[in-house]
Image (tube, rainbow, N blue to C red; front, side, top):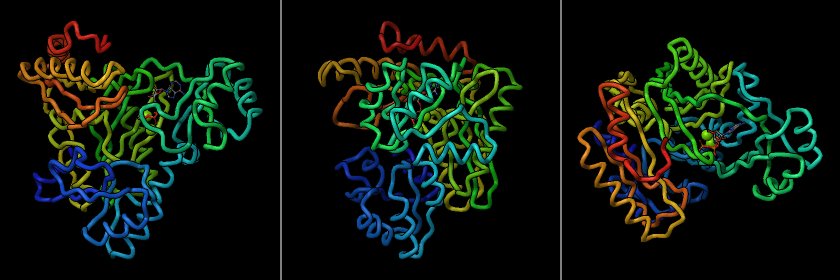
Length: 369
Ligand code: ATP
Ligand code: MG
Ligand code: MG
């Protein structure tokens, strides 16, 4: 939806392949009902467009590659990059080989591997699914040797393809969106600080609350990570701040932690993505506001009616705040832990942005401290 909104400003009409009827994008783009994991649907879809791109990495990359070849059109970012990124373990190996610092990790093929990893790297550690992970669905904490079985079954067992990652005692998490042109030219957006709860991003604050030296280092790591991936488009690079900056993971698409760019940067991450994949020069990515805070609005487990009431009140508050922009995705069901929309507050400085946030969230209990 947000990519199509950006496309409209440069006269690019988007068409989306998405299986859920009346998906959020359908209000601003033409929707073709079909699955992005169904080779026949992708082949048919490719015949009706001039260029293919993705906004989720869990697509059938082989089918995408073949469909584009058959239709005689380009696909960006390249399916070879999608194949590496969609398997988080392959991604880890790729970045380790490229010399980008990551937490110690190992593929897990047996319960003995799990015990060995715990003995070598200590507890807790994170057990992660190699594929189809998002918003922490695919992560399980192994707190002690006795907790290994529960973590394994939470992720669907060894057959799913798993890897273990040492616990990172980070003092902050950062993200940098990087646009890579078809010619390899790189442009980084400002470093943003992300706050996750239960592995789901809930808030981002920009500029990040870090010293300028660390911000330069974060930009350097993000540029190095993206330069190692030969594919045009915007990438979201997630990092952990420890004494040393560690790469967490990279998404080959505009990213939730880059939503702030819509209101707070000269070029949004969505416009930058479309410029990059269509071979245009990517616009100015610098901040146009002193500070920006983005908050994800998540469903909770209280049921449809209680969620609707809570969300209506929140939307009223957001609408009353002059420099608060609400993006509502129009999802019909308010499921627990699902992102239903987000709002971004821009201000002249951090203090003002936080004061506005307090007014929107006052006694709201969304848990943003
Ligand atoms: P996304 O929605 O960003 O794709 P994901 O499901 O792929 O998320 P990760 O990015 O691997 O999950 O992890 C989500 C969050 O869990 C991280 O942002 C961080 O807060 C926490 N986390 C992940 N790995 C570790 C680790 N090794 N040590 C400590 N915390 C971690
Ligand atoms: Mg991920
Ligand atoms: Mg992540």
